[in-house]
Image (cartoon, rainbow, N blue to C red):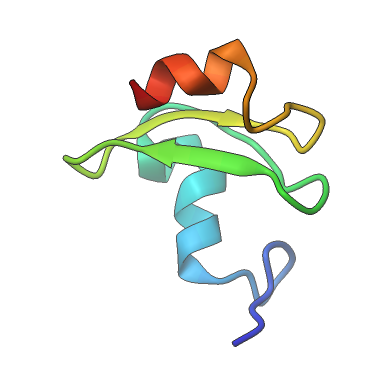
Amino acid sequence: EKVDVSGTNQHPLYSWLCNQQKNGKFNSSVKWNFQKYFVDKNGELVNYFYSITKPNSNKIVSLIK
């Protein structure tokens, strides 16, 4: 199902991911397709990367290990 990632109809998940007051970590905005958000097993936002960051980059691989 397609959802809005920004704007007045922003899906609640993206609202949480993009709002520091809600997630406790970062303010961000979805810039383009394939933006990556990392949430740990406790539901805490760890980091996010814009689409320019490749999935196999050291930054991302180190978060997964």
